[in-house]
Image (cartoon, rainbow, N blue to C red):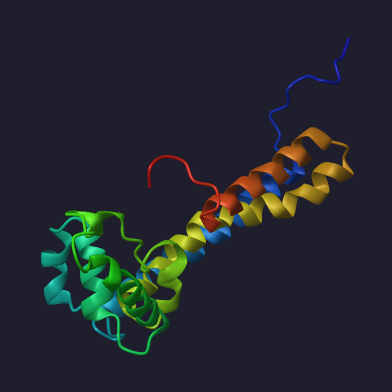
Length: 182
């Protein structure tokens, strides 16, 4: 008497494909981490924030850190600096007179948030973010490659779940889907 739905100890083709891509992506990300870290630590590529300033900045609250980086370290002419100046110009009329509230800077939108780091990849301290993004995003690629096989073998439920998983991950990475107060 055999059952067709009996659990098996063998991995499916999709599981093996997912694992191969995940393994290659993981090793690629780790190798890039070592390379970008070496470029940073050995000064081969110039950082945006000088190494001697890092410990002081890390000791500050995140809002102060971001404001300092945006105002002091992002070079003039960079697209983020243009946004900083635009925000400051827009906030200037509000800050005049009695309308300014103490602590209003806490609600300030920082230009150095979300994917803004990608515009600073020419600096070694931001180049280090690239392998982290690769490691975080490899799951999307893994799911994307197994979807055709799932539907081909008639596993529509798993195929739909993989599509939904990709959608959730992409929406979360884009900043559209947010959970919590950050």
